[in-house]
Image 1 (cartoon, rainbow, N blue to C red):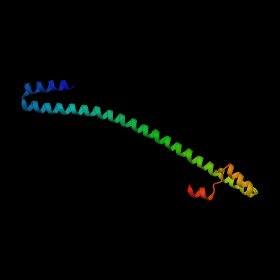
Image 2 (image 1 turned 45 degrees about the horizontal axis):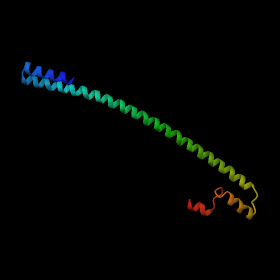
Image 3 (image 1 turned 90 degrees about the horizontal axis):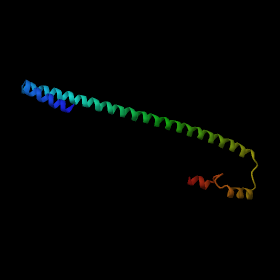
Length: 118
């Protein structure tokens, strides 16, 4: 297209006169620039659509993960409430047995010191 433009401009300048030829060459150059711009713009729009599509997919995945996390939080809260109800219904262990139990399972019942450090 560029070589055609150069040939057309040369023919118009020599055949029609320098003023009219310059005007025609300016018009042809502008037309060439417009064609190139439209071609590049269509490429840009295609890339932009692809990027937006990827962003939408990522946002959908993020939303799904957040929903799953909220559901897990609800389940954990329900299990904690059930466990608290069960513990309230139990008789307390003697101190010696409770100390042995806490040594075996230190993370099961957080102490006040551990809760303060977290």
